[in-house]
Length: 397
Image (tube, rainbow, N blue to C red):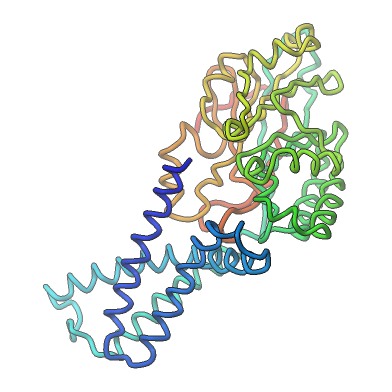
């Protein structure tokens, strides 16, 4: 974990050092504009690491302000960096082949205009991504349930609503959660599965009024078979005991390396997240969970089995266990372009429908955001899986 965060903050420092150097040099001779721009840049660039590293040592309002500034800064930083690199590449090429009529060195006015253009473009991209992040869509997927022929008739369908990575906290609150609940209820699901990272961090529990409103919204989910959940890595960062109490208060059944037969219709296996080791837990394998649940032994041959696992690592385990379906989140589909390409490289499957042997998988892009309240890669989604809807094959894609 330390290596991961060290790498992230190292890359963050390199990007911002480059951008500050380019800003400082580009605005040479521009008077007070240079000083104002550089000071503003340093304040925002420092806010993200300061908020994340010092939040526990600061009064809550000050920490909230820093984290809000840092989160809002991340998206313009990424696109400002990409546009700055593109501008430098163009400037280098222009100095060699004179593409424009006035090759470098440019006048102070032209240089100020270039800085403004990069700033305006990165803000425009961020605003479009913010609108996208606040506009969840419903995605419908049909998945056949390959069970014993003696089981329920093939025309029986279980409508499963998947929501993951809501990240309730400083930036995502009860208002957005209520929107997700209303959209989900409108689909008339049979069962609702929350796939982890429902809570972003421990700051969520500091505001009793906000927490109470969120619990009320979450308790408004309507489904015939109830709402079920597993924990994600951020739920552990926030405090697994607190998250467990919150979900229970909202009427959501939490599975922690547990299995349940749901109304004789399907089997749910809910896995503890990989980050459970941070709290001293060693999570069980799927086989161990099934073996420790006697009711599964008689029902397993005839009922579809659904594995809920927040992070889509080790997909072969669900296949080996003979699961009908595994559902996961965590990846956010990268959330920000071009991070989606990096995330795609990290996982066997980072988003969408997948199949290994007879086991189907769906990895959702999530219903919320982490960090910047912006999405420029993929949409926030509520996934409706129609399990057993048809007999057609589900192909890899």
